Amino acid sequence: MAITAKMVKELREMTGAGMMDCKKALTEADGDMEKAVEVLREKGLAKAAKKSGRIAAEGLVKDYISEDGKVGAIVEVNSETDFVAKNEEFRTFVEQVAKQVSMTKSTNIEDFMKEEWILDSSKTVQDVLNEKISVIGENLNIRRFVKFETQEGIISSYIHGGGRIGVLVELNCKNITDKVKEVAKDIAMQVAAINPKYISKEDVPSDFIEKEREILKQQALNEGKPANIVEKMIEGRLAKNLKEICLVDQPYIKDGDITVGKYLESVSKELGDDITIKNFVRYETGEGLEKKEENFAEEVAKQMNV
Image 1 (cartoon, rainbow, N blue to C red):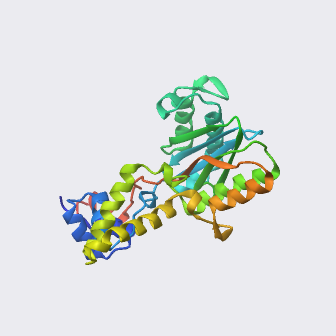
Image 2: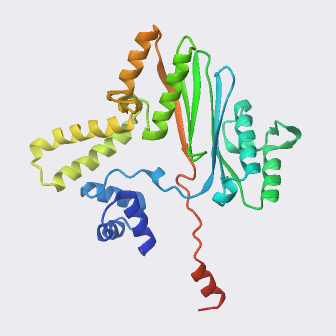
Image 3: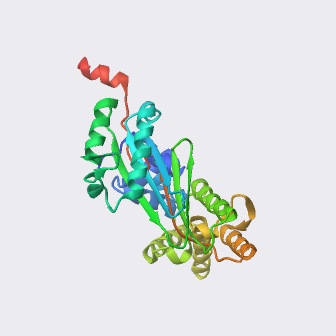
């Protein structure tokens, strides 16, 4: 597979590795971006790349929380341009979609799009989306959604950057107090800022851990470390990596001297309640999507057959 300058640039932005190292890694991986990231990591030339780093498409993330805090929803709706993402009609539509999600029984986009629209039962969600596309003049897409419901606990949310990042959090607890609401909001802000992947180490899939071990082992061997200390190094580095991606093990953003887990323990003791994190989801607008790149000079050249 031919390695293009665009591919090299993308890999460099994802990993921070040098241009030539990125080109060699892509060549070795036959153009496979994820494999190239692994190659660079094994050689100690890159940190673990976050797929969510490739933020490109425009749009908006919006939440909806019921008054009693027992139902929460979050949705991402994409547009072609940032200009439309700031359009009041578009923003109102996304708010309505978030409320629709809070009432849905669907668990996938296909079924969701066939539902009756909450504001007009003669139309489906797809019908209303088509109408907005026609009025706004851009292709729009309801990309994904999540709905949380709780019987014993609270759901909270946090929207950052006017809708660029959105977080939904579900806490288990017995009593809903102002302090608990504050804690839920703080945890949502933590997720928005630090972007954990899992709640705790117990939630990390075993295949992910094994893959990390293999990468770290190759990394250590490439560094010329003696075989008898490689295993200790692997476990030490693995533990460090897991702390970075597990929410309860991350330093708490409001007090870096304690972890999120310790913060929850402290509040639980203070309130005489067992407050734990049951679920969370974090959406960042356009993560993993390729953005259409406009090159005016190339477009003119094509039209002139240059």
